[in-house]
Image (cartoon, rainbow over all chains, first blue to last red; front, side, top):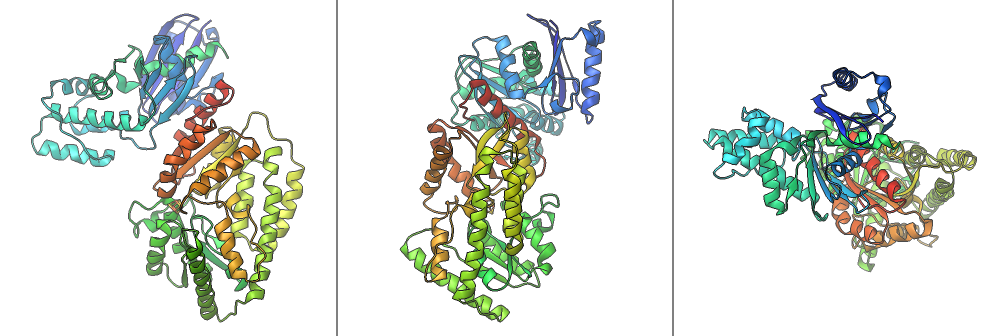
Amino acid sequence: MLTIGLDIGSITTKIAVMNSKALIDAKVSFTGYNVEKAWRNILKETLDRLQLKESAVDRIVATGYGRSGVSIANETVTEIKCHAVGARFYMDNVASVIDIGGQDSKFIRIDKGGNVADFVMNDKCAAGTGRFLEVMARALEVDLTDFSKLSLQARKSSPISSMCTVFAESEVISLIAKGESRENIIAGINESIVNRLVSMIGRSKIEEPVVLTGGVAQNIGIQTALMKKLKIKIWVPETAQVNGAIGAAILARNI
Amino acid sequence: MKAFAYFDSGHEFPEEIVMAAGFSPMKILGDVHKGTAAADEYLFPFFCPFARGCLADALENSGKWSGIGVAHGCDATDHHYDMWRDHVKGVPIFWVNTPMKMDQLARTFYIQELKRFIDNLDKQYSVKVGDKELKDAISLSNQVKSLLRQLAPLRVKKDIPNRDYFEIMRKSIQMPKESLVEDLKKTLADWENRKPFPAGKIPTFLTGSDVSFVEFMDLLDNAGFRVVRDDLSLGERYFATSIPDAASPVEALVTYSFDMPRSATRVPSDGRLEYILAVLKDTKIDTVVSQNMKFCEPYAMDAVWTIPAIKGKGYNCMHFERDFTPADNQLFTRLEAFKETIQQKGGRSNV
Ligand code: SF4
């Protein structure tokens, strides 16, 4: 059986191709303003690369904020469920998933049966999401890959106290003007994202093992700050960014 | 009959008094499609967008109204009264200081307050609001509430989309009451002939800030949540109880105000939780959607202890903050995920 998961996020579109046991291929591209173009392109490129025809695909499940725009999907499923299922593919006994996406962050608690027991999501605010990191990286003129590593060279972290992305950006600019090092500022930004996440998770119980997913999961500075703050070990799958698409492809097997 | 507009936050405004003065009461709801820009220049950002939308509505439409009444509910209503007096021109604006406590002292105070409001209307419009006029208005109002009490339970049995329920509530607080009675009778005949409650929809109790635009009700429906009970002002709070028969109609209005299902603006709010739990038990529904409008402090604060108490009883319960916007994709995802968790467990879910 060949199934496909398409995760149409606010910043990136992800695809995962799976057979009944394994992940065959996965890819990420920018969503842009045209959701339909985004999924059609990534689907075509992937099938061409794998030398497959669309008719060879048994089922497609779409997820992400643009899921309802995927006309060829056999079903749409929310990204909360897909991330839970995707994380279990990586770690069978996962108990908690923290997903940091472009405009949403989520904490998902998974019960012993592998179902979503409960979840919390950020209210509509970019602070604590990938979009926040993007804005900050732009203000610091650093690309996101360097941004991830630079915080590890920080001697201390410069706290960012503004809750609002727009004001946090001007706070960053004033720190630059004061001569604060980029590394220290980035460490402060990572801490502020982690603080937002932890306050969002609030009183929900974080049980281990914990898997971190989403585009921001690759950021080593965030991983480190999160582990330090929560005093737990966090697992980051290599496929963290396409985790939702993997979950969708797995769910497609059983619909 | 000319409209007399009012702004309140938990069904505090005594509609019957302006009806007795010869006006048609009309609750201001704002217009989510026009947004709040017209009002923003007069307000600090911490005011909830619903109240901002109401001011924008008043700035645009006050010329069509005979008067505006503002009744004390939350902090927004209080501060808005002061601001509206400065910025909404060409229409008299009245203040009704509804007490938030419900003890004997508050009762005595509120009787005096309603009499003061009546006096002010008498003077402003050269009318005489007497006991007879008030009793007639109360009788008409009770007729509306009685019809709504016949309509509302049909939501549990029949296919009544959330938007249809919202629409009868919107009419009830905005249409002249005489024509409303006929309208509700027709709606009752229509609803009685609807198809049975649709399979696949989750019967839901809706609580929290008042819902003032139909798109939010559509969002719930599209995500699979059918509102069959609620405690909103544009909902059951408006019609759950009738205005009692009493020798003094003013005292009857005070009793009504104190006995209606409690909003989060009133203290203590234990009664609000008791009401919700009693309704859930009575209707045998196990799903609660609780929402608060951004910057709506009364419901945000109330949720801190109300929601854990509801969850603690084992009900499916989701609480979230929402905006004053007709489209909300993120919220739709959260609701759908809530539905998925309920379905996969075949029942309970707490989010
Ligand atoms: S939404 Fe909340 S804050 Fe706004 S007027 Fe209503 S009760 Fe007050």
